Image (tube, rainbow, N blue to C red; front, side, top):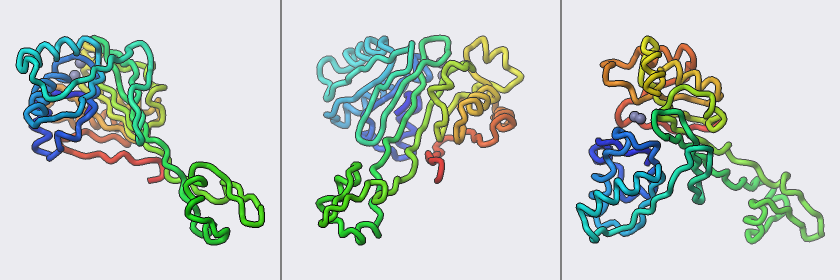
Length: 276
Ligand SMILES: [Zn+2]
Ligand SMILES: [Zn+2]
């Protein structure tokens, strides 16, 4: 989960997202609209009898803020542990890795210390080419080793190079999240060529000055970031409540970066790789 605003639990119930699926929470910064849902979510997990550790990646100040509330509510009766991982707001760093994905944090430009996050799918092992398995009679016990990069030796001692036997699968996919931030070239390299970029677009272009002084972006800013970073697709959100209809922000963004969509509640955006 990335950020946890006040309505998070309600939305999870509405869209049937299992609470037990949440094991890592990445918090971009400590403004209320990004953290007010945390204590409610933590309480629900405790009510459900959660046992597994919950990992939270955030500014180190969150630890005291949250543990004070937990102590007040539960004393020492919490059913699970929360492991806090402090973010680095000076430079990009890898903060998480499992068998499928790596997650990086990188500094954004907002009123307080803020990080964006980049999720990189790990490359899948290549597939063996079925005709080659037949041609060289490759036994099952050899196949995993070849997928991992090994060559194959036939019974009469001929070495078949790995490149002839395998075919790479699709390019690994990537997603980046940038909220909240002012337009800034400094984080472009951290999101270069991601397949899908979520970027905040709080204001329309006629409020550019307000965007700059409050350290937020306009739709055009978000689109310029997408263009400069050469991303595959841009989705924008975090619209100011002053806009009853965010079409103006979307159209301004599209005039700079056409492959842009505005988020709507509950909408799912697949992360598509280059050739998908
Ligand atoms: Zn903020
Ligand atoms: Zn915000």
